[in-house]
Length: 355
Image (tube, rainbow, N blue to C red):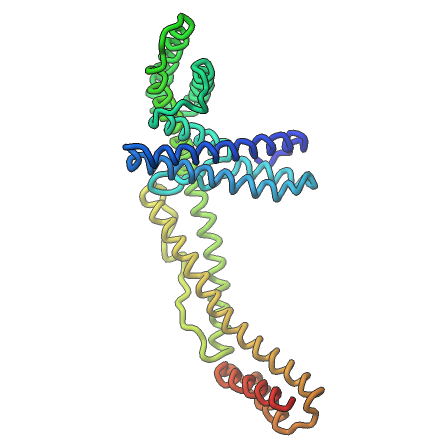
């Protein structure tokens, strides 16, 4: 992340990723139709939705990269930004919530989910022959081997055992196929087990990564909200002192939440509360800023109508009086927005009537 990637490699990568995206979408549409006509369609609906969600996350990130790529008109900063978009987290959607995974991880997860769906639906992937399916399985088992190495020590032995079992079964099937044995009924269950294992390992690794980053994310967000809260409170004080009627929204203080916890359960609740504070601050900022903006808008309209009156109704004493009264309201704090709005509306109506 953040490193430079040669432009020629990025061009090839984006081309391949675009082709993968289109192929996978067509495949998922096929699987969706098969699931709809399957007796187990209801049981498979969650897997189909998850597969579509992961594909959508990849597709959305691909579109962002394309915009940044800008048909190759990129400099050093744009290339580093693309690298961050590739390796940064994206919302890939997981059962019961969301899961931050990188673009390559999301593609692998999509592969595993699609393979699992095909196995459950007993579909021959793209009518490929057994040799091609065995090659795909070998590549998948090798990816699992790489994922096992990333497992923490307390669960690595269990992951190793699953990998060894999959490798043994695959080797046995390959040997049987070479001898001419019928392995059609055995390869489907292996594809299903392999896909499930790879998916679980990807999700587990991403979950650990996300949890490790949650504390830092909470602390960063807390600091940002603390600064935002101070600014919004100042904005609210200014609005209350400057205009009437002013909004009466409470401005939350993020420090009331206390320090950032470390346990997963408490941290999840803390992040939820931080999000609530963020939304409340946004609402308060919009309300108080809107009141001040309304004052400025009415003042600008009043001045604009005065300029217009000078050209279409010069010397009109009634308009001059309306303008004077409007300026008096504007120069008196707190500014009465209701009265000022009525004066501006009257000025506009009177001005239009003089045409």
